[in-house]
Image 1 (cartoon, one colour):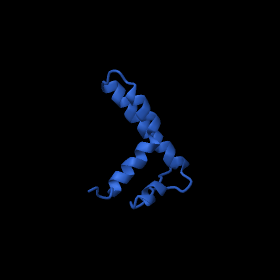
Image 2: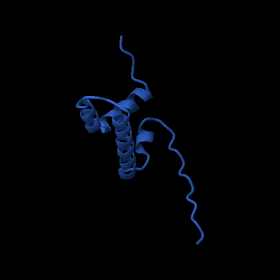
Image 3: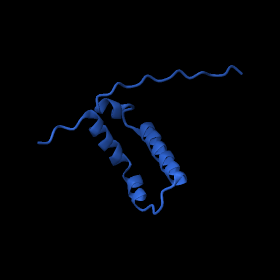
Amino acid sequence: MLSEPSRIDLLELDIDLRLTDLWREAADVGEWNLEVVAAFIRAAYGKGYCDALTEESPGSLCVEHGYRLPERRAVERDAA
């Protein structure tokens, strides 16, 4: 008997769908090493950052999956 997916399962699926292009490229990697892994981590981070900046409704990924929307940090401005 299959159980219902958890919030984490659904969040992971949503993120995997957003990273489809990276997963496709990962399948073509012949030899994994630290340099290749680091490149994929950077690419995934950058993709997530860009997705967050271009969301139609900021924070919707968190809200849609039942997570609290983190508060924005105050930006300190240098007095020049």
